[in-house]
Image 1 (cartoon, rainbow, N blue to C red):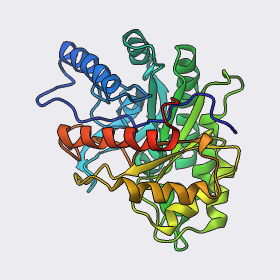
Image 2: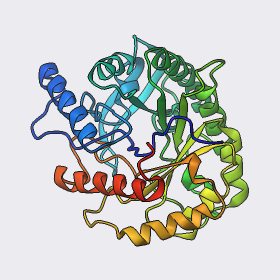
Image 3: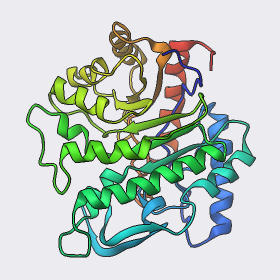
Length: 334
């Protein structure tokens, strides 16, 4: 399907925040977001986000905006504080829609919103014996909240919405990882509920980022099951290591889906060689129409606000490189 919205130069949403910025200081956050919008426009990005500056991490839009969850004192190796579900969640109001409205006032480009997927939250917060009968039940309740928020975001002018589920790609391995509290089939069913909108403008795209790195080998049947199970318009896929598995993920994607290739490594300061990146994209173009594509970094730059993956200067160089690669692919047609 030919690209109709032309968000060619994408990024996952989180950016390196200014030093000393605290979410407890709303005025400072507002100022930082305004500067982030100007920064993204200066870099000629075709998406604009709030950088996740108002939030502790990429899950916070949901975890801070609904009841039923308790924050613990534990943190995982990824730096994410563990939350547990003690009751089925209920939304206390808009999650991201108010921020999207603010962004819309700062730029003529429709803002992008990124949310954690309900399946990811259910898999990582469910704990037996705490008041929720199953991870599937928790996921379905979260999916209804996320779906309602997506509808609200669309009504506020957002045209690109991304759901992050970092657990899915590990399930596409020829030797899949333990799915934990939520099976692969249940995860697909839950996330499918969140993206199921009865009506939306033709220009709206709902995307899924199923993980930050491809497995060593991709089980083609499971990859096809993933894409068939979640009716997302756009898939944001890792494409920065040059592996056969990354290519296989793109190859398995149905022709009626858009794709965004994470062509630069958001975790390493060293810049990629443009010729090497273009050769990888050329390989994908052998079986996919690049008119359905976009490019981005491999993941967010600060999915945990206090733990940026690069410096602000290195981040800028990576984003400039993404723009350069986009111009190699599509000229100035953004």
